[in-house]
Image 1 (cartoon, rainbow, N blue to C red):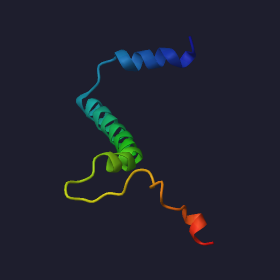
Image 2 (image 1 turned 180 degrees about the horizontal axis):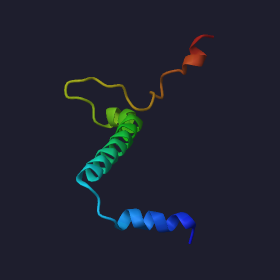
Image 3 (image 1 turned 180 degrees about the vertical axis):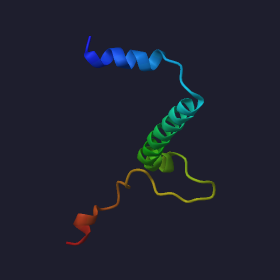
Image 4 (image 1 turned 120 degrees about the horizontal axis):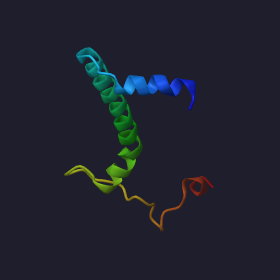
Length: 75
């Protein structure tokens, strides 16, 4: 057992004041919010391709087989 483990166990088992509980809840909410916004930012491009807004025209997810790549069109 690491010396700091006994203090961590004490902190877990002791009764918390109302202010400490509220502070812990607020901190947990900030962490969840940060993770949620990170997840939404990562998945936004995929969601836009899969579920376009109603009435919004979208590009196909993959380029057409008949279109030439941009790097070939300059020759």
